[in-house]
Image (tube, rainbow, N blue to C red; front, side, top):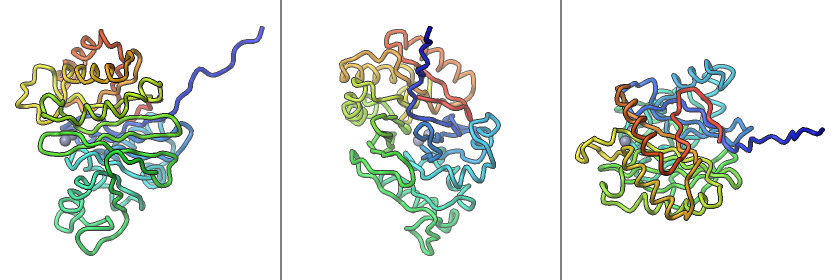
Length: 303
Ligand SMILES: [Zn+2]
Ligand SMILES: [Zn+2]
């Protein structure tokens, strides 16, 4: 009798989390390497922690070889969601060891890098614009909202969408590999709190992909438990606010989100708070029944 040998796995993306927390552990801050399945050409979505995360990923057998090689050869570019340190400290600190590559971001984010980080007063200017002399290792690649661009030396494209994050504009990156998509959101508040339409517009943009089963995963932040007072959210989500937003997405997609991969990023320590967030999320998810995933540093995710 012939046994069906067709593999059930139809993975499109390999994600290696280099850092997953929203504070205060500087060895584990937001950074996610993403490549199409079977490719070694990654882009790093935010870069809060690089070296410590790569070392952990090697220990976890996500990569083989030396961490310098992975930094220099496997990370082909960075997508930086906004200018907060917990999303780019690893990029700055590792820049002397890094190889030439692009930094993708909205113009406002790249401006912050230029003015406040790759300047000769805070570090050295490893980029190709800003304070002189420019060492030109990194090329600033500004993204216009809603316009897809190829990411150099990868097999992926990216489209940026603005997000409301307290006083800053943050960014969602829609990554495409052929006909498959992965959506990564930097820090964001909820539309109702931020008095914004940004998430609503983002959900409108990706709803058709959800309906067609092309959106393989959403990576989105939940920084605080649901009882955090609105005035101390500082442009972040809670389990309650996330579920509201997912409800909007489901409505726009005209489909259930049951089984949709939703990776919860940026939970803020201490660990008892993280435990509380997870409990609240798991309970609040009983209606939508999404596949909630809590990433761990160095442990591969496949979508
Ligand atoms: Zn953050
Ligand atoms: Zn932030």
